[in-house]
Image 1 (cartoon, rainbow, N blue to C red):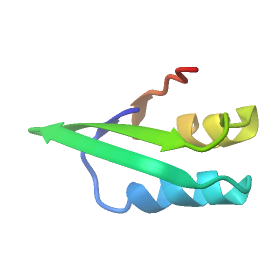
Image 2: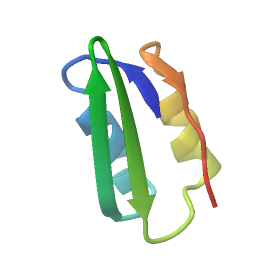
Image 3: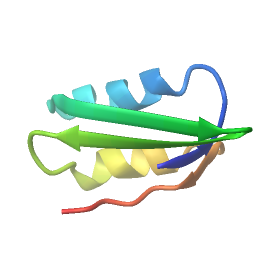
Length: 67
């Protein structure tokens, strides 16, 4: 997920994942200037509604699911 670097973005990720009953196995975040990239690794595929909830945020620039 590519985002504008803003506070309170991590709770969005964790609540969307927890809301569909998944666990985050690993999470990596890297930023440069005002931009950040976060990679979430879950124990099962993310349901469409969780991906859409994250992508719907105005500060989200791109969300990609890798299977």
